[in-house]
Length: 126
Ligand code: FES
Image 1 (tube, rainbow, N blue to C red):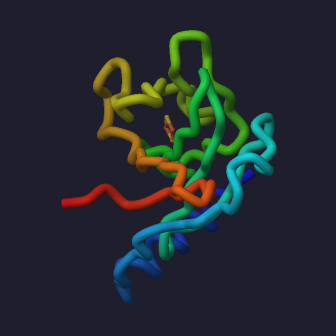
Image 2 (tube, rainbow, N blue to C red):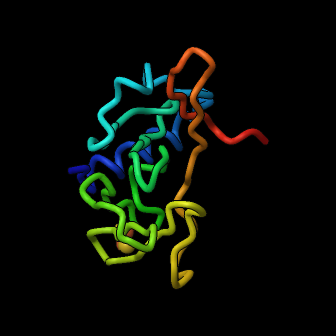
């Protein structure tokens, strides 16, 4: 589980010495990835979670945009949302929007499978 103090420390460090996030995270051969597991990684200093759900890979920020709650212990509901364990806000995995618009959207990142079969998570193109 991702702790609150760890999240605050990371956010403080990012604000004090911002760095350009790495443009992509190559998870490796998609055929060899455990589809039942949650994959944790980084785009630069951004913590990212990758999960297989409803027939496809999806990636999103590891922390809730409301108050940095950990999203690594929640699973998607039938309606395609995940609930933050701290205050229960629900985020649509497809759009990142919080259902009741109580806070900003959860950052989501595109996942692609390259021609050589690797799963890649990348920052959205401007
Ligand atoms: S920290 Fe996630 S809903 Fe408040």
